[in-house]
Length: 570
Ligand code: 8DG
Ligand code: CA
Ligand code: CA
Image (cartoon, rainbow, N blue to C red; front, side):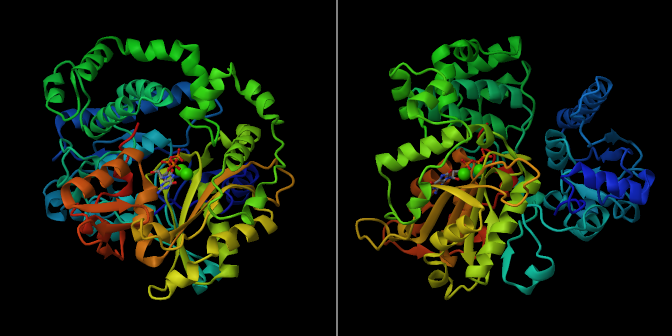
């Protein structure tokens, strides 16, 4: 669950009026009830935390503090509001960070009477908060099950983070957004960072070796744009293994790293080079290569994949301005007849549609390349679900993608929708995607549709669960704030029948490598087929209809992994 924030926290005017109303000393930065400029005091309980991890956590706070102070002295306008201080006095602490998940164990070190007045969270909360530069909602990071109530009360009383608790009219049940599970520390302990499949490993958003991961990712990107698929997957695998490794890699523990899966001699020597120099020569050479630069830039445009990027490069094109001229696009202007897609055949996957999609992506690239903060992602979901409730009551949604994995900024919004009626929902969502996009267009929210696909008729040559998803890749804009410049956002809408809703949510939550390994695990270890639109058993085509996300993992014979631990990519 999230921190409470003022309803209109994104406008500076509102925060000013809040302070003049309440007086600055009363203005609260969060429901922790900590005054705005006061630091959040963090007590890290040593028990069960490896000494190395302990010092990493402490360093994390200290380095962050130094960076924040420096920025503030330099008069930077991006000084984070997150103000953390370590304390060794648990009584003074606002938050207790612990790897212990049992109340009895915690009580061996801290009096419960004191502990229960604090937020008690896992180390991941600290790592993710520092990474995102804000006090993250604690609900998903509750460490001790017994403390859930206390933790919620101590830091967090408001509605939706990755879910939205309807208020006012929405409470009447016309639509809802699903709540995410909490992290269960005991369950996380059952996972192993040595496992061969990333769906068996806990992979945090930011890992202790993040700068190494970023460097290797440059080489992975190089392989991707050149179409070297096998090599790209090898680098993706290596990255995913490092993402799950829980300690900082140093020259002293490199022997441990040698035991991890998928790290061949070449990668190991790159890691050694990185440890010595902070760089990998091959990555740096790539960054300096004009071809790498052009192709990397081209694939940032929606609709341009590596293959098209190489074709355009082959035509002598090098910059986005040259692409604009080639496609006869004016920046910021896109009055393509894209809405005609609404009338076109559902599977209009023609070359013309692909080119149209590139033209839109190119024209709107300045907006579409901007990331979207979590609050706006939630606003977009709320708005879309409100519009949907005018067409069909009783639907529910989950915001999937990177948002669900805990990213503070998303490049687009992925919303998976179904109907709450288990028996009749399938009929009720049929055709809804197209109707919703039509309505959103009429209301001025959707300006373009890059792709629209409907339910396919049953086709015996396909496995049947391919029939069950409807999908619209759209461009969304806030229509009514004429005082501000409108910003175009990419929004993916996915409609699923109730029986495949949770497989769709798992499939669209990612990350990409996590998904790849889920499919591989299902096939190699379970004789099953998994994709966003369903799970089936290969030998008799039996279909599974999981009722919860946990059920998806259970059917696949996997320990549940919280979405924030599915960050198996860089
Ligand atoms: P971000 O860059 O958007 O912040 O990160 P992301 O949310 O992880 O990336 P994404 O490109 O929006 O992809 C989200 C997940 O959705 C990812 O795991 C892959 C999956 N996905 C697509 N396209 C499709 C598709 O056409 N079908 C299915 N089943 N899954 C898809 O991106
Ligand atoms: Ca996304
Ligand atoms: Ca997406």
